[in-house]
Length: 73
Image (cartoon, rainbow, N blue to C red; front, side, top):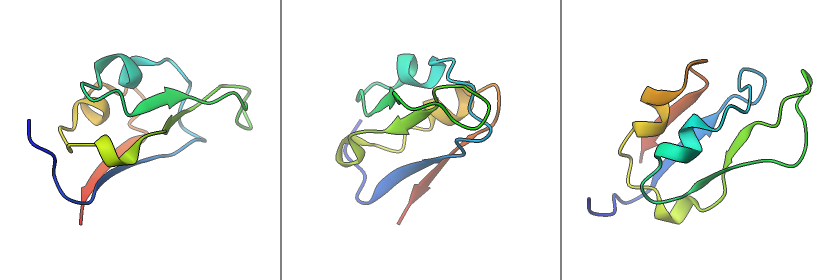
């Protein structure tokens, strides 16, 4: 897939339970889990390398908590 200009994801860290499914399906390996727990004690995902995002939407589709949204500017 080609790089989409200004693609990025937002992750609601209060909804994310740190399951890592989004990290495992990201073909560009732009996501990772944080080392800091959220208010519920989970380690949420974050977009560590946003420049690599192609807006494939796999992370959002895979998220069981619907905590991820994908945007293209």
